[in-house]
Image (cartoon, rainbow, N blue to C red):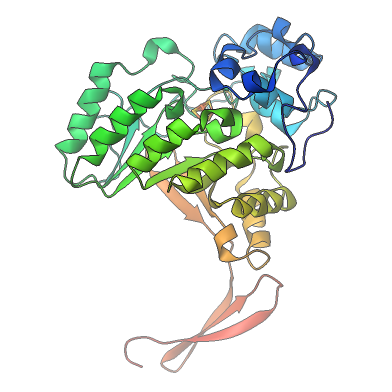
Length: 386
Ligand code: SF4
């Protein structure tokens, strides 16, 4: 395999030797990708040699949080570099086993705000509906490790219907996020039913779908799925690219299909140490996303979840990235940098400090700002007596 990083990479062309005899039609089938996921160390024979740390992660960490990697996502990895940003997102590592007293099983308090099982209602106008605990690839930085990848905690049909009924009976809810796990692991028929049921609720303005399939299993974005999304549109699709090397040919085609299906597509990047914690990586990613109709929506500070502290960066890292982006890429490429407060406090946005000084001058206040180049400017503020 060659090193990843080009927007025009085609994972079929890059496929590891293990899949040498696979035909293009098989590779392009999401069912084939799903059935051939890499789950155990032996599955990496003919892919690349696992590092000692990855083997240790398999031996000790995979029990707590399963491993699953689509052949597509494995083809994006650099087999010669254990620090490869794609590899680190999906392969277990010894650091997952370290425990810290501040880590939380449910860092966002999602279970605490559940009026019915499988639905979080925290903000007055929004609800999160969990439709599955299954994902094509289990991201090692997942904030919902407590239940994602565990089939025993998956949403039953009755639970799902109760969640939809709760939304229908609660007129204050205007915005629903269909989440999981990854909702696009469900069949087209099931998604058609869920989205159709939500669309019939008159007080809903917004239906969102949170999915990492465009990154980890872009073959899932078929014409059939696009028809379902178009039928119930506009659907706001938030996906989760973390690194420019993930923007390969298949992912670009998936984004284009979503855009063609009237979806409003945004990206929620999680800031991850050693993966995307520098401004040039984020800039390259955001430019690539914009080129294909996906708006950088959030940079999320990595949560205080158990087993992911080795991915976390200081808040100052995110602020420095925001400071770099502002002024160097149009506002459409500057996402909000957000911290989701532990225990269910909700999201807050952090901004670099642009105010250098403020002083009164008669009835006005002079505020001294700095811009992205460090140049300073006085702005005369008024109050209602002016
Ligand atoms: S796709 Fe989302 S829910 Fe699934 S493992 Fe990754 S971060 Fe967690």
